[in-house]
Length: 154
Image 1 (cartoon, rainbow, N blue to C red):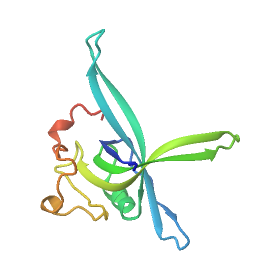
Image 2 (cartoon, helix red, strand yellow):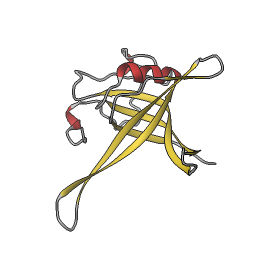
Image 3 (cartoon, helix red, strand yellow):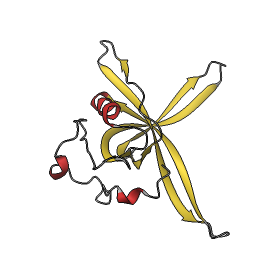
Image 4 (cartoon, rainbow, N blue to C red):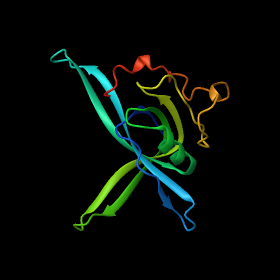
Protein backbone atom coordinates (compact mmCIF):
# COMPACT_ATOMS: atom_id res chain seq x y z
CA UNK A 1 0.00 0.00 0.00
CA UNK A 2 1.17 3.55 -0.68
CA UNK A 3 -0.15 7.02 0.03
CA UNK A 4 0.52 10.27 -1.81
CA UNK A 5 -1.12 13.03 0.25
CA UNK A 6 -0.07 16.61 0.93
CA UNK A 7 -1.61 19.09 3.35
CA UNK A 8 -0.58 22.74 3.14
CA UNK A 9 -1.69 25.72 5.19
CA UNK A 10 -0.16 28.90 3.84
CA UNK A 11 -0.56 32.18 2.01
CA UNK A 12 -0.66 33.03 -1.67
CA UNK A 13 2.44 34.78 -2.95
CA UNK A 14 0.61 36.37 -5.88
CA UNK A 15 -2.87 36.63 -7.37
CA UNK A 16 -4.12 33.48 -9.14
CA UNK A 17 -3.48 33.46 -12.86
CA UNK A 18 -6.30 33.58 -15.39
CA UNK A 19 -7.74 30.03 -15.74
CA UNK A 20 -6.45 28.07 -18.73
CA UNK A 21 -9.15 26.25 -20.68
CA UNK A 22 -8.26 22.69 -21.71
CA UNK A 23 -9.89 19.53 -23.03
CA UNK A 24 -11.42 18.44 -26.30
CA UNK A 25 -14.53 20.58 -25.80
CA UNK A 26 -12.83 23.34 -23.79
CA UNK A 27 -14.62 22.10 -20.67
CA UNK A 28 -11.67 21.80 -18.26
CA UNK A 29 -10.25 24.77 -16.41
CA UNK A 30 -6.97 24.92 -14.50
CA UNK A 31 -5.42 27.61 -12.30
CA UNK A 32 -1.98 27.54 -10.71
CA UNK A 33 -1.37 29.32 -7.42
CA UNK A 34 1.83 29.85 -5.47
CA UNK A 35 1.50 29.01 -1.75
CA UNK A 36 4.11 29.86 0.89
CA UNK A 37 4.50 27.82 4.06
CA UNK A 38 6.77 29.03 6.85
CA UNK A 39 8.49 27.52 9.84
CA UNK A 40 9.96 29.69 12.58
CA UNK A 41 12.73 28.37 14.81
CA UNK A 42 15.46 29.59 17.13
CA UNK A 43 19.03 29.28 15.89
CA UNK A 44 20.98 27.30 18.53
CA UNK A 45 24.26 29.08 17.76
CA UNK A 46 23.11 32.71 17.67
CA UNK A 47 19.87 32.49 19.63
CA UNK A 48 18.02 34.56 17.05
CA UNK A 49 14.64 33.62 15.60
CA UNK A 50 14.72 32.58 11.97
CA UNK A 51 12.02 31.73 9.47
CA UNK A 52 12.31 29.25 6.61
CA UNK A 53 9.77 29.71 3.83
CA UNK A 54 8.98 27.06 1.23
CA UNK A 55 7.08 27.86 -1.97
CA UNK A 56 4.64 25.35 -3.46
CA UNK A 57 3.10 25.37 -6.92
CA UNK A 58 -0.52 24.23 -6.53
CA UNK A 59 -2.69 23.27 -9.49
CA UNK A 60 -6.49 23.59 -9.13
CA UNK A 61 -8.91 22.09 -11.65
CA UNK A 62 -12.47 22.85 -12.76
CA UNK A 63 -14.68 24.13 -9.89
CA UNK A 64 -11.70 24.63 -7.58
CA UNK A 65 -10.05 26.70 -10.33
CA UNK A 66 -13.15 28.86 -10.63
CA UNK A 67 -13.32 29.43 -6.86
CA UNK A 68 -9.61 30.21 -6.60
CA UNK A 69 -9.75 32.75 -9.42
CA UNK A 70 -12.86 34.42 -8.02
CA UNK A 71 -12.05 34.52 -4.30
CA UNK A 72 -8.28 34.35 -3.81
CA UNK A 73 -5.73 37.14 -4.03
CA UNK A 74 -2.14 37.71 -2.98
CA UNK A 75 -1.82 37.13 0.78
CA UNK A 76 -4.98 34.99 1.07
CA UNK A 77 -4.67 32.14 3.58
CA UNK A 78 -5.60 28.70 2.31
CA UNK A 79 -5.77 25.08 3.43
CA UNK A 80 -4.96 22.74 0.54
CA UNK A 81 -5.14 18.95 0.33
CA UNK A 82 -3.77 17.17 -2.69
CA UNK A 83 -1.03 14.98 -4.03
CA UNK A 84 2.51 15.49 -5.26
CA UNK A 85 3.02 15.36 -9.00
CA UNK A 86 6.36 15.39 -10.79
CA UNK A 87 6.44 16.85 -14.26
CA UNK A 88 9.21 16.65 -16.82
CA UNK A 89 9.69 18.86 -19.85
CA UNK A 90 12.31 20.10 -22.26
CA UNK A 91 12.93 23.85 -22.18
CA UNK A 92 13.59 26.06 -25.20
CA UNK A 93 17.33 25.38 -24.94
CA UNK A 94 16.70 21.63 -25.19
CA UNK A 95 17.54 20.94 -21.53
CA UNK A 96 15.48 18.34 -19.67
CA UNK A 97 13.78 19.91 -16.63
CA UNK A 98 11.88 18.46 -13.69
CA UNK A 99 9.44 20.24 -11.40
CA UNK A 100 7.17 19.38 -8.53
CA UNK A 101 3.61 20.60 -8.12
CA UNK A 102 0.68 19.83 -5.88
CA UNK A 103 -2.55 18.79 -7.59
CA UNK A 104 -5.25 19.96 -5.17
CA UNK A 105 -8.43 17.99 -4.55
CA UNK A 106 -9.63 20.12 -1.63
CA UNK A 107 -9.36 23.84 -0.99
CA UNK A 108 -10.47 25.76 2.08
CA UNK A 109 -10.31 29.55 2.10
CA UNK A 110 -9.10 30.65 5.52
CA UNK A 111 -9.25 34.38 4.87
CA UNK A 112 -6.47 36.94 4.82
CA UNK A 113 -5.21 39.84 6.86
CA UNK A 114 -7.48 42.10 4.83
CA UNK A 115 -10.67 40.02 5.13
CA UNK A 116 -13.26 40.32 7.87
CA UNK A 117 -13.87 36.58 8.27
CA UNK A 118 -13.11 33.18 6.87
CA UNK A 119 -14.63 31.48 3.87
CA UNK A 120 -14.59 27.84 2.89
CA UNK A 121 -15.12 25.63 -0.11
CA UNK A 122 -15.75 21.93 -0.14
CA UNK A 123 -14.23 19.36 -2.48
CA UNK A 124 -16.74 20.27 -5.17
CA UNK A 125 -15.48 23.84 -5.10
CA UNK A 126 -18.77 25.45 -4.14
CA UNK A 127 -18.53 29.14 -3.31
CA UNK A 128 -18.44 30.21 0.33
CA UNK A 129 -21.66 29.69 2.28
CA UNK A 130 -22.69 28.65 5.77
CA UNK A 131 -20.79 25.36 5.52
CA UNK A 132 -19.19 25.76 8.95
CA UNK A 133 -21.74 23.38 10.49
CA UNK A 134 -21.66 20.95 7.55
CA UNK A 135 -17.91 20.60 6.98
CA UNK A 136 -15.72 19.58 9.92
CA UNK A 137 -12.33 21.13 10.42
CA UNK A 138 -9.99 19.16 8.07
CA UNK A 139 -7.38 18.27 10.70
CA UNK A 140 -8.99 19.51 13.88
CA UNK A 141 -6.00 21.76 14.50
CA UNK A 142 -6.48 24.28 11.70
CA UNK A 143 -7.87 27.42 13.24
CA UNK A 144 -9.65 29.89 11.04
CA UNK A 145 -8.64 33.02 12.91
CA UNK A 146 -6.96 36.02 11.40
CA UNK A 147 -5.26 36.84 14.72
CA UNK A 148 -2.87 33.87 14.44
CA UNK A 149 -1.30 34.99 11.18
CA UNK A 150 1.26 37.44 12.56
CA UNK A 151 4.16 35.02 12.00
CA UNK A 152 3.35 34.56 8.28
CA UNK A 153 5.71 36.13 5.73
CA UNK A 154 3.06 38.50 4.31
